Length: 349
Image (cartoon, rainbow, N blue to C red):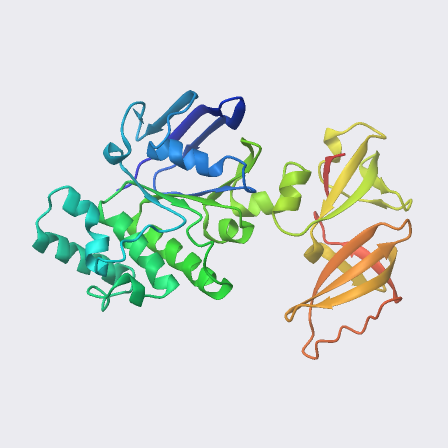
């Protein structure tokens, strides 16, 4: 039911503008793979190259080992779910779902049976004869997914399909998409600018910028071991501190030295940037870096402490809020800061 997708040194030019630049990656059969990056980084163009709506300027697209050059979209083993869903308002739900089968000449009774089967899968079993206008945003998403599944694709392509939903519904649909992918075993290729979506659903993530892939890895590796400052900053909140290599440690502008991973890749005295996630910052009175509380921001389960180090550098610590919601530290309080083991990572300056 699934195929691998191999992108070999793909480039895509629009006049003098290169939208996709030397992308080289293989997506495994049955994998949930996400392209993550800001608007204009080339991720949607990659989907269109896979689906056949565009042909690459350079390189090749292979699905299941077969070169897709010259093969039209409707002849490829793919289905594409657009951002705007593109449902037909005058058709009932079941006919929307089986439109692709009707085009292929499948008899009405078989189409209806297939629609009923897919409506069960997407938890819309009582909606076959409803109009699209009678559905909620989340239900429309499910219809679009069912329609894509109706043609039995081996690769499902999803172009930011959740971006128009509110936060609560978006989170529900993230779990729904992952469930459907696991149940069907189809290769899912998902495009998003939302790092939480990518980390929540994906087996692997490719982080993109300016048409290039900067890093490919599982969500934990991408989050905990970003390859550069852009990836670290784009994937969640990150503290950045300037430092220099000092033996097997790094020396901060405050004069303090701390342990860090990645030191061995740099020469003595080299200027580097340190990346530290807010949840890996400890605040106590047990000794460490001297800091002053500048501001506390309450987020319900978490409280963010905005701290100022001795040299004026800023640092954010994310602490679990106590039941009272008060952490007992007001602006101006003096505290000590330390980091969990392995939390500090050296990046290029």
